[in-house]
Image (cartoon, rainbow, N blue to C red):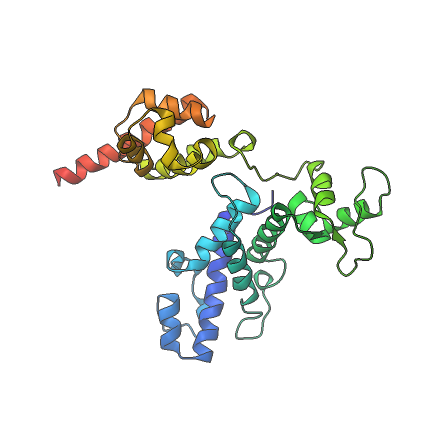
Length: 296
């Protein structure tokens, strides 16, 4: 796992957006920069980069969704995240278009190759290439294995069966065939393979546990219906439920039903007490909130 988390990604993104606002002010007009970033400069500030990053509302920016989605795909791959080349590609475009320095000419670490946003883009692209059957370079293998590039170079120099075989004639960068890359990565403790079935997925239970609403649970139920039932449309018949009942579970509008919750947990191969307990919790939260709203 990389030595950073989503909070660090969000913190860095806010700084990047502040630098972008300064560039927009210089390129276009300060009023346009204010529209972009969402707030005006204070009287004692000359540049947005001097503003506190907490003022940046990340929900206004598409880049936040790109980074979150690609981070999940790259670091905690699951059948719930899948892989979408458009998201991976859009994130590549975003990081390539990031400023190289602030308007004062200073190059900050978060604007370089060592920045966590750039690293997320690189890891997600590396995983996508691995999943699609493409060849990878040494840095991409290092990111996927959570190892240093030096360790990968050592593996390339190792001529034993534990070593890594490069594609003959490739250099700057040296490329590794997809089958060889996957063989080598599978033997590395830091590598998390992309699951292509529920039986291989180690993160579904974690995502259920983190869910805070029946709507979020419903999204999980709908998404898991593809690998388990073929499509959500096929699920009602296989569960012997009505289409209306299953649709309510996908939308998070169902009443709590322990029997049906157990049936879903068993169908998806999720820990039954965990899933049923989360359904009970989120349903109660929803009903209490609805009751308060109705009483106002």
